[in-house]
Length: 247
Image 1 (cartoon, one colour):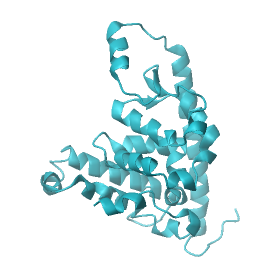
Image 2 (spheres, one colour; image 1 turned 90 degrees about the vertical axis):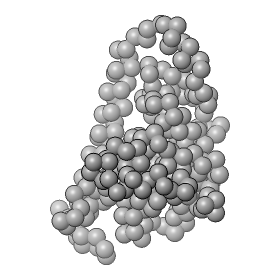
Image 3 (tube, helix red, strand yellow; image 1 turned 45 degrees about the horizontal axis):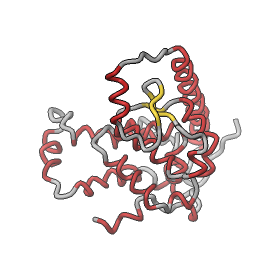
C-alpha cells in the first residue's frame, strides 16, 4: 500500500495511524449525529425542580439544553476563545455532556485555538483544573479530544493521536493509553481501586499539595516523546508552563 519505514516510525505504524484517525473521525461524527437525533426526539418536561436547579447553577454564560451544555451565543468563540476551555470546565463541574449544537460550533471555530490561546493564563488555569479535577477528568478530556479541542490546545497530544507501537507492552494507541492512565490515577485518588492498588490508594491522601497531581500532566506526556519529536518546535509550548512556578 506504499507505507514505508521512516525515521522512528515503521510502515505498519503509519498505516494503522491513518486507519485509526479515519475511524476516530467517523466515531466522533457518529456521536454528534446520534446526540443531535436524540436532542430532536427528546421533549423537555417542565418542572419547578428542574427550573430551580437550572437557575441555581453557575453556567458561565452557557445554557442547559436537553440535559446537555450548549452555547448561549453563536459568537461565543469569536468574542472570547477562552470559551473553548470554559465550556468543558463548566460541563465537568456540572456533570453535563456537551450539546451537539455546541460541538458543531466548536468544529467550525477550531482554527481560533492558536498560540495566543495556548499562552492565555485563564485558559491554562481551566485546562489544569480539568486535568486535576476530582470530577472524572478522563471523561472531560475524552470529550475535549473528540471535539478536537485537546489536540489543538496541546499540539504534542495531537501528534500522538492514534499513534501505534507494536510490541508486547502496548495494546492501545498512544492517546488512548494516555487517557486511560489519567483515568486510573483519578480512580486511585477517589479510592475506587483500593482493592487492586491498596498502597497507592493509601498514599494519595498524604500528598501535601494537590499540585503534586500535576503528575497527571506528566502522565499525559509520558508516551509523547516520539510523537513530540515530529511536532514543530514553535507549537511545543506546554499549556502547563504558565503555572509551573506555582508549585
